[in-house]
Amino acid sequence: MTPPPTSPFPTPRPDPFPEADQTWELERLYKDLATVKGKRLKPVEKC
Image (cartoon, rainbow, N blue to C red; front, side):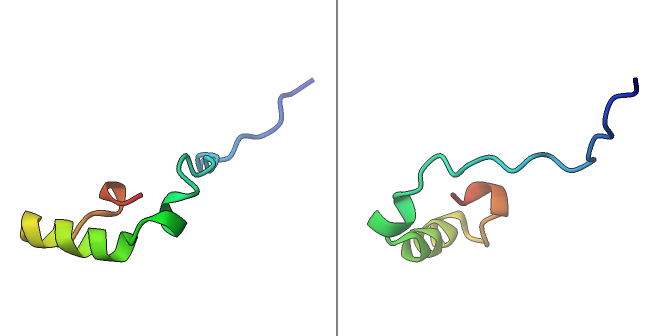
């Protein structure tokens, strides 16, 4: 019996902080962080 094929894409993980988008002003936070950093945030730097 052969194993089922595997996907080359990782399985999406559930959001570890689902309430963050509702509780915090994330767009404002990202804007402020980008200002301090001096350039745009990378996707990995965002929630």
